[in-house]
Structures are given as C-alpha cells and as structure tokens.
Image (cartoon, rainbow, N blue to C red; front, side):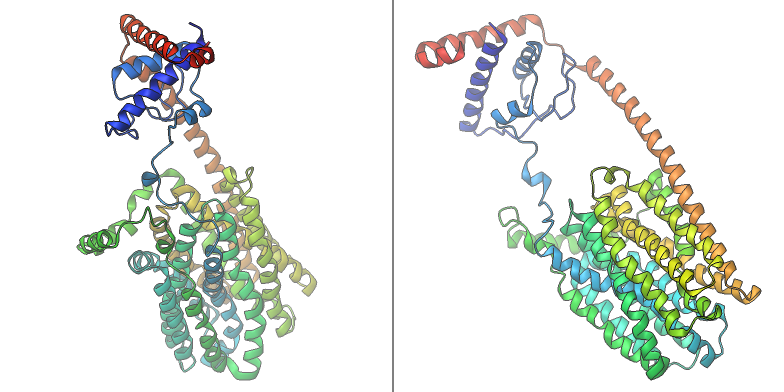
Length: 560
C-alpha cells in the first residue's frame, strides 16, 4: 500500500472507531499524548491526540513511520480540539464595555497620580503659613504616596472580595473627605493625617482596583488599554496644575483644598462604570445560580486567612525575573517624584514667574498625555512585545539622564525643554511599569504581585522626597536633589538592562538543556511497539479497506 492509501484507510478506520465511541458514551476529550511529546520515530506531536489503548499507539506509530506528519489540517479533519472550553475559561473581551472601564480607570488613576504632584503648587504658601521647612513640607506628598503604595495588599484583598466598583467608590469618598478636613488644618501634623493617610488610602483604592479590572477585561489589547488608563495621570496633571495655581491666587490654600475635595468626588462616578466582568461571561459556561450560591457559601469560610496568604505571597521572591524588576523599580520610585515636587520651586528660584513655573508641570503633563498611549501602541507591536523589559530599562535611563542635565538649564526656555523631555521619559516608564509586571507574572498572578510590589515601593516613596528636601535644607541649592534623583534612576535602568540580558540568556540555556533531557528521557521510556503487533494492526486496516471497497465501489475509486 502507498502512504496515501494507508492514510485514507487509517482515517476511515479512526472515524468509525470514534463514532462507535460516541454511540457507547465514550469520552473523546481525554488524551494521554500532550502537545510537544515525542513519538517513537522522534517526531513532535503538534496537537493533542487520543491514545486510549495500545492499539491506537501502534496506529500512530505506523502512521508516522509512513512518512506523513501530524499537521494542523489533519487535526482539523479528525475533529481534535486543542482543549475543552471549560478548561480554558472565558476569554477577555478586549473591547466592548471594557473601553468604558478604561475611561473610568483613566479618571481614578488620573487623580491617584496627579494629586500628589499638583499639591506641590500649595507647598510654598503652606510652608510660609505653618512655618515648615522644605523637608517637612515634602513629607505631605511623601506620606500620601507611601500610603497609596503600602495599601496595595489590602486594596487587592478588598477587590477580590467585593469587586472593583465598590472599592473605587469608597476611595473617591475618602479622597473628598481628606481634602475637606485638611482645609481646616492648623498644623503640619494635621495635614500629614488628613492628606497623607486618609487621602493616601483613598488613592490606593482608586489605583489598585482600576489596574486589576483592566487586566480582566483585556488580553491582546492590554498594553494599549493600560497606556490609555495610565494617561489619566498626565491629563489630570496638565489641567490640575494651572487650576490649583488659579485657586490659590483667589481662595488661598485652604479654599483650594476644599474645592479640590469636591472635584475628587468624581472618582465615585468613575467607579460606577466598572461593571464586574463576571456579568459578561457566556451563559452556557456560567455556573447555575444555585451552584454559585453554594460555592460562595463554601468559600466564605476561612476566606480572610486565605486572601491574606494569597496577597502576601512570598513565593514571588523565588522568581529571578521578579527580583530584577523589583530592584530596578524601587530605584526608580526613590528618585521619580522629588523632581516633580520641587520643579516649580526650582523655577521660581531661577527668577521664573509663579504662573509660568506652574505651567512647567502642565507642559510635562501635556507631553506625558500623548507619550503614554503612544508607548502602549509601540509596546503592543510584535517586535517590541517580546522585548518589553528592555524598553522599560531604556525609558528609565532616558528619564534619569535629563534629571542629571536639569541643573544646567537655568532659563525658562531651557526649563521648558527639560519639562518636555521629563514628560517623555516619565510617560514611557509609567506606561510600561505595570505592563512589565503583567508580562512577568501573568494576569492571574498580577493582583498578588502588584500588591506585594506596591507595599515594598512605599519605602522608597516615603524616603525619596524628604531626602531631596533635606539636601535643599543643607546646601541651600536645588541642583543636588536633581543629581541624586538622576543618578539613582539611571543606575536602576542600567541594572535592569544588564540583568535582563543575563537572565534571558540563562533561561534560554536552561530551556534548551531541559528540552534535550526530556527528549532523551522520552525516547528511553517510550513503550516499544512490537513488529508483530504492528503487522496485525496493518492487516486489520487492509481487511477493513477491502470490506469497505466491496460495499461501496465509489469509495474504492476514491481510495485508489
């Protein structure tokens, strides 16, 4: 028999076998030959194949030894699915209502990141009114950002228990209350408590819940969705900086905080847009209501301890890629916010008018507004997506380099140029910072990973701006804080690049060795199929072919 006739006979025999299995109630989805497994002839199976009995193994061996290969088309002809839909689970929508969720996340993330930066407009007035030093006034934004990052695990637990919508609404209420109560403060400690702690918790709820729900709505377009959502930070900074300067000139810092608190209540509206993704699943794949209720009642017992262990999962530290990402990220966070906090004050010290100094933050935010989604589009391309960690390290080096050059820029046009490049570097980093974490950990482990990362980041966040303010108090010059921040960020970017090159080369080498070892073990442990048994199977196939040819002459012509 020729190879084509063998294949035709084998297909008909296998089809008859599968039909008999279906009539007998057999399970066609079970398999014991996985994708990538080596056959006795040394060929790799590209799709899942059934091998319930030894005879099927002999048929597969004969088929492969005849010179034919298992191709995707052949798999489709034999109706062999890649995996049952129940195992894969519902696929993210990558669109639809997800874009409304991105819009809500754009608002909540915008307030979360822009508020601590735009607050620096009030620092000069607060410093003069309360008699605080540069280091003391910098603790307001520092505590606010540190609490926002430290509350990551708690926010992740609440999101897992209640969903993103109520958590974001609660965060908006806390932000509004914090600003209103801070407007009545008479001491720097009162501002630490209201703006730093209460406001920081509100921003934490807004940030983590928004990031988590985006990872559930998007997969293929996730970099673009993250870039659009994270663009809320520059958009809100772009208009909050001049608005705060206007409010400061007409209502003072107390009235400005009162109005700002009312504006931040819009986070509650943003939270209302975050519809739970479970409502969008396929009804055929959803669990019936009674089963859902029973499952929820069972999982409620001991859920607090389980969630605490989940979102404080220390097993991440066994992943070398995660450790490399964490070290570089901590170095960036340490020097990221101090230049923003003191940029307006530095411009005023160089003779720039107050409104023009405030517009530097707006220029930075305006550039950042377009860089973040643009970076998301670039990162989503097929050339950059596999190398997204390298793009992240380049963005850090780019950002740190212009901080080192800032003390050389003493005129307003040069400061505008610095603000432009600052916005480019800052936008690139924050468009990639969480996408890189998703790339390393995956969407399933991302809530746990982002909770652990944010609680670690609170320490450099807490120490960075006050350390920069202390340098200003000691030396009486702003250039030293830019040297410190630029040096730390540039070092972190170079560290990420070098260590990622080393880590990826190590992983590739380990994977090659592992594949080689598995191939050898598969060949050694493969159950041999005797030649006599193979001949018996071949004779059965020929007998079935002759029987089929006698019953249907047309089939005979088709087989020949």
